Image 1 (cartoon, rainbow, N blue to C red):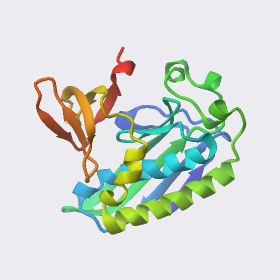
Image 2 (cartoon, rainbow, N blue to C red; image 1 turned 90 degrees about the vertical axis):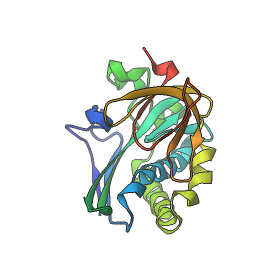
Image 3 (tube, helix red, strand yellow; image 1 turned 180 degrees about the vertical axis):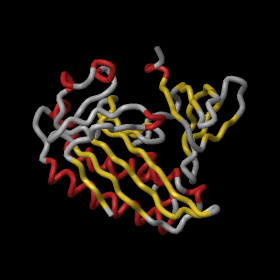
Length: 221
């Protein structure tokens, strides 16, 4: 099941952050999925969705599209899309996933809230022309279906080459806030076949991060 909204009165992203959602400008959609997977496999579906969004954005924007692990799509280094996944589970198996996807299409940067303006953009601002929202949505849903079909059949390993082609974080120093509230810092080495983020920490330890909120050094106040 897929739902598309013209606006959101209480749009939110990861960790309860707000997502600016003005009417008649962008794409806000939720997709309900029922894959036959273990709960441990679910985080990789966010990454697979990010690949589908990035490929769709690139149709309009060309090669300046990157994925920030785990759930943002960047255009010229600025956020243009966020993905939020929620799930239901029975024991260790997923009963359903809900992928919430927001893509900034036609909101000008000057219209964004001041606290987001230096971090975010839209396709229209980047490309200099308005985006046909219906055509964009059609391409996105086609890409999403194809990509998630591969993920269901082959796991994230089947998507990994496409993810790596848009993953520009290796070598960057980051701060990660994990779901339990703890924080760690390190240099990104890559992602593994399950989609986990691989870090080298200051004490030279190798750390595998399955879920968390990542801040790049350039974003650190």
